[in-house]
Length: 341
Image 1 (cartoon, rainbow, N blue to C red):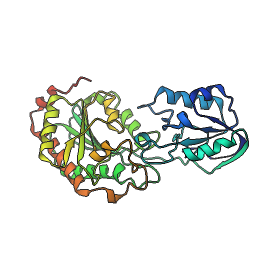
Image 2: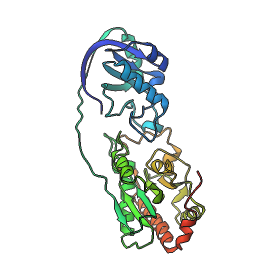
Image 3: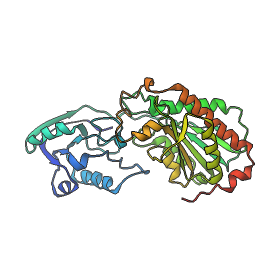
Image 4: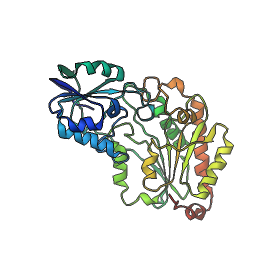
């Protein structure tokens, strides 16, 4: 999302926050490396997770106004997926042009610091509009379950596991629930923006639900499901006792499912931050290899790595879970609906 540029200026560098703070880099081509480039900087207006250090770096760059940035990034699968090098800045609200390269190339470029360099980046921003679709079944506005899977993918990847597989589960689940008549309203949401800097679909959803988020009793979010190796992991967050027991009972009926460790890099975090219980569905392999995997956000995320039958099993299990809630007395669900965080 960076702006393009054609710049001829002195090359300067900064590896730490202290170096950036003390230098006058106005008008320069600034090489960011080392500590400053160890992890992706959160977009300046990203509201769900934005460390103070990231905000400070962005604010300093905007204040000091280099003409352009060259970012020498390393490997960081936990925040950037398997991409190497990764773009340090993915932010359509940040207007200093930036490019990125490997840490090794950055080391070679350091020998040119102090000389005049020329940087050309051919990049355009193309505004677009989209819709955030919601499929709804049920008439009770005060008791809702939101089932979500983001529909977008990073540029340059087929996005099979991140997150076409989640969307497939959502569609299969819609088929399973077409005749649902329970007292709890179901909302199936293909979130439009999880891999997009401004998360526009999620923000639209929050705006539409302002003052009504307390009526959402549970979020089930599917992201990264169906990897060909290992089981499907369901991670539980703040589930009331009755819901937790019901979900554990479902797990025992499907041999390809297991309880997973907590993780927060998904749309379920939007709900957790509002105090809403959540179940996050992903691949056990992904949880175990989150720090080292080289698939997410890369061309390797292709259909061949996904086992379609695992997606069928997830859809069947979630359908059984929801139908089980519909068949239970309503007060069983309502009684424990306010979890302690």
